[in-house]
Length: 376
Image (spheres, rainbow, N blue to C red):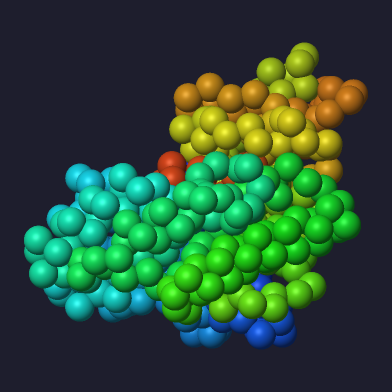
């Protein structure tokens, strides 16, 4: 199948770009002496994940129990569920473990730790648990020097679970945009998580895993001393937010939405396309960054960036393509009805989530369909 055979809009993966991104990240982490565990919530796709494993990744990270179930069914056994484990998910997690999944789960509170320990003991299971560490005030986790760290560890002293490590995610790196700031955040992330592991070891917990990561810090790190594994997700496709942060070029963004021109408002300099926010998502992550790309950067059918043209507005199934600055009053002649564009997304995870499948485009211009997982 060729691109022009596809009924738009569709989510398109540029396979040479994706493979480049995979190899780049794998080489970066390996050069610093750590293993790499990709976060597969970005693609939620077996074929993309298999490409990451073939490149050297060891295990995967997921953000939902459904992802864990589906990737385990696809043959992947080593899985970290990197979201705090709610009690109503303990049974599903336990069922995966009974089937042979090497599942690792997460906690950052005494209450959650007690629930895991109690359930595990009652069910004759032993949960492998990582304690989440807050190294940047971004979201969840325990501060490395907090007394709560040892309290959670003590709550996990039970036949129903074992502490296997600590984990952190420097999500605030998404707010940065200079190499110096990213390098500093990567070191802050590393040092904080390593310090938490040292405190646990000092009171008798082995803590073999020290897991850190975000796409910006993973690509910016200069030192991973004390870290055993790195996680990152969006790097597999990249997006415009990552471009603005400074960790990729537009030509490295592997995910786009293929769309068609369906109309014009010539006096306004608009071309109307069949990709609205239902295709691109409502994520406007670049709006607060230096360069605002609207709902996405417009590229031609070959993936070449059309500078200045963005999806400047969107309704449910309509997108407005316009040029920044002076309106393009020749837009109907330049892009007649039926013209196809590739639109680079603000946030690859959110845009991918709008589609049940991808069209994977190889270097020869042919496409194949790859399914995508849904659900929690």
